[in-house]
Amino acid sequence: MRYTIRIAAALVVLAMALGGSSAWATVTQVNPSPTTTNIALGPPVSVTVIWRVTRANDGQGNCGPTVSSASGVLHGNSGNGPPITTVPTLLTQTRACPPGPNAQAQFTFTETLLVPADVVQRAQRQGFQSLAYVRTFNEIGGQIPSSSLNEVNLIITGSAGASLGVTRLALAFDNGAPARVLALNEPLSAFAEVTFAGTGLLQAQWEIAGPGSTAGTPVFRVLSQVRQYLASGDTVTFRSPPLPTSTAGLYLVRLRITSPAPDFEAPVVRYFVLESRAGHDLPGRALGLGSPPPRALLVPDSVFSWEPIRGARAYQLEIYDTGEPTSLELPDLDNASGEPRPGEIVQALSRPAVTGMYVSGREARTALAPNVRAHLLPGRRYFWRVLAIGDDGRVIGVSPMRELRTP
Image 1 (cartoon, rainbow, N blue to C red):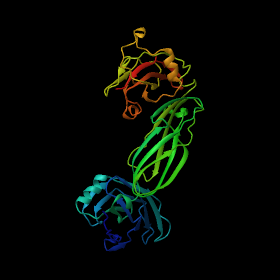
Image 2 (image 1 turned 45 degrees about the vertical axis):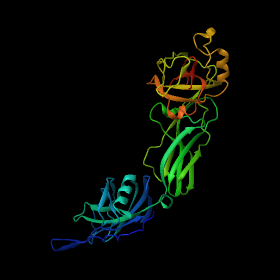
Image 3 (image 1 turned 30 degrees about the horizontal axis):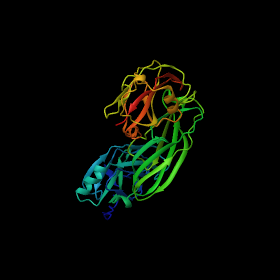
Image 4 (image 1 turned 90 degrees about the horizontal axis):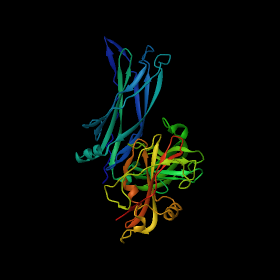
């Protein structure tokens, strides 16, 4: 459903007088850009607004050095309509007065306005055809304070006609997992699934933090830029450039959307590069397993646990597909321990793990996340193990393989 626009006129600058003598109001003009844009009824919406403010000296060459706006207000239909919510974002700049009477200075403020979905829905329920975002800019520090305001009109419309807004961002590696353990120089890419509403240009950048900073505060650098025009609202998938694997250690990867700005933090996925070959000849101490027991049936509340190892920065739970269905026959009396046979382990390790999880070194237990369980087929035999990884990306502990069955 589409609504018509109602554009309110900007309020003029106030002229003020004191003690019988006159003085000029020094904020003379406020021009927002855009003055009108569409917002969708449904998802949260972000709108980038550029405020251009003109300040002039009074007839004696005086002005207040600071121009600021303490907050903005969203009104129903126009700036004269009832207030719906306040946006408590301070915009402020300080600049010296230019020389000469009536000299002018220009101020530019860039603001990303986030309009929550419930605010748009509330306005629509109250019968408003649009919202007006109003800011008052004050000149502070002069002998006589002055102010001026203007507004941006936000048309409530259907998603197809609305400006672009990102509602969801999911990130994973090429096997669908949010964490990977790889050998040196093993190829790797990440994929981002972006759900959006409306129409417009998406701008983002793939960023990575490497072993030089991930031991402390991560420092991200740009790998590549993403610019793509999106229309009508849907889901789109982006593939990262090849990720670096030439140095051992922990890496963090993200797709950071710069425009339109989303109302959530960019998710991060992690991968470890090992100095040994992943899945073969892994060094390290023996790591004991706890639950689930051998040949256990995976249930919704299954918990995987292991013995912690001192110095572990992280643990990687790996699950391998045996390629065999779950057997309903009597147990093998020649293998009472239930541990996989060496030949079965070699065969399983000849293929990459089908799924897995990254767990902080402070934890020694985890349940399987839904996206991890989604890679497991019903009625199947799997093997699982845990790797302990140190600060330098080396494997410092390896558990034995253990059989797991899916119902």
